[in-house]
Amino acid sequence: MAIGGIIGGHHRHSVVASRVAMFAHLLFLTTAVLMLVWLLRFRGGINIQSDDPEQIFNVHPFVMTWGFILLIGEAILVYTTIPMNHRAQKMVHMLVHLVAFILGVFGIYAAFKFHNVAVVPDLVSLHSWIGIGAISLFALQWLIGFAVFWMPGTHEHTRAAAAPVHVAGGLVIFLLAVCAAQTGLVQKSASATPGTEARLINVTGLFIVFYGVTVAATVMLRIATRYQ
Image 1 (cartoon, rainbow, N blue to C red):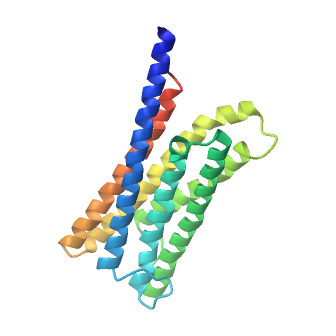
Image 2: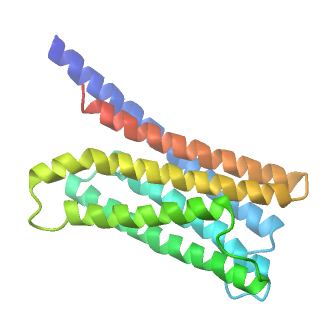
């Protein structure tokens, strides 16, 4: 009876985690479309080679949302949504995170290029401090994760002990990136003309928060299955 209850509880948490992850994918698509509509409809487009400083800047929110925050979330969800063996899931998780980091670096480059063209000082806002902190911690997390979970010779006990810290640290860094996005959108909302654009920015920010919450909830539900 007790064993049946444990199995049933494990199954329920797995099913709920899968459904929450599916909802997160829907939020992923919605957030990506909202960001694209904002940048194309109200901000004049996206072009890193443009002579227009605003089009250069627009690369930053586009890449940091699509390529950094959303891809990090999808890499986290790999363990719930991709039906492969654990090693294959780890490989996809690592590679998607690597792509997210490369795009994140490109997004930061776009911001610095905009500052240079528009003659704006670098790293003076809370948004920039949180963002630099998030991507720096992300790089450190990736390197440590690669060394512990992929380098040959690492003892299994070491990997088992490091896994909970890796999961918790990754989730904190992901949510820190979400916070960075919120502070950046607040800056743009404050300078936008009141009306449709300002509302669209706010709605986009809300969907990024919803996405972060659903990814975090999926991780918590996956962890709960281990204690059933």
